[in-house]
Length: 257
Image (cartoon, rainbow, N blue to C red; front, side, top):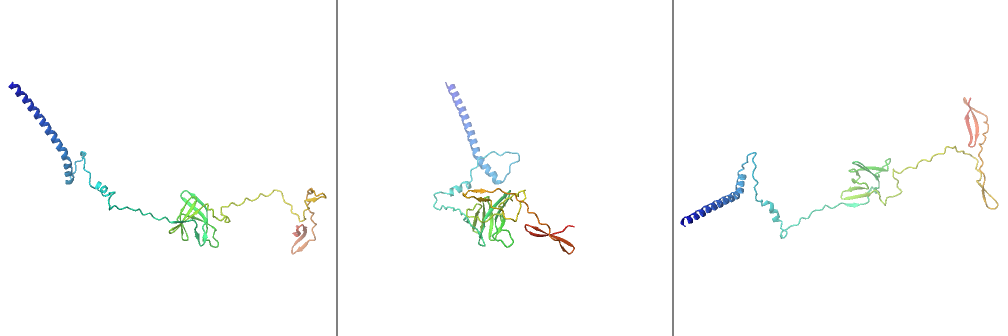
């Protein structure tokens, strides 16, 4: 009985030693994990550089206070909270009518070709001998006005704080002014038949009857008026001339030899 009792105590003691040994190992491993951040910080302070080719283990670093200080300071319910008001630049006043020397600027056409833009306007600064119309580009100046932008349907001019907008299709545009792009009428085609011009008055085209009915008289072909024989030749210096009667009067013609 005593021998059996001693064996049980021996087994219990061995198990207790194993449990104690395992507990110590677990505790040492836990202490090692807790000391890693401290060692890493110490290395960073001393300025040691790891050897090339070695991979440093990933270490969870505590967040710096600078990362959340801004969030803490921006308290929505703070009595010292200030509101940032954005400054908006005032847009220039837009005027629909621009004048130079009292004459209104009228937009007649716009040409857009790749990066080049041109606008056709009247010439408000016209001098004697100059054209009535003028081509302008972006950036050019007209007296005190500067061409800021040329859009497909309007022209923008700037005079300091005042901006002028001139539309291409202006309902108030004077219709009496003509554009240089106005097409000229095509010339009428002349008839191939020769026209007979006579000095005699043409007869009345119609004659009235007693009953009041109007009848048209048949057209009679015009006969050429016979020319009068040449009159007596008139000599002058070394040449001789003859006088011929025509429906338009007497004509003196040089006599051929």
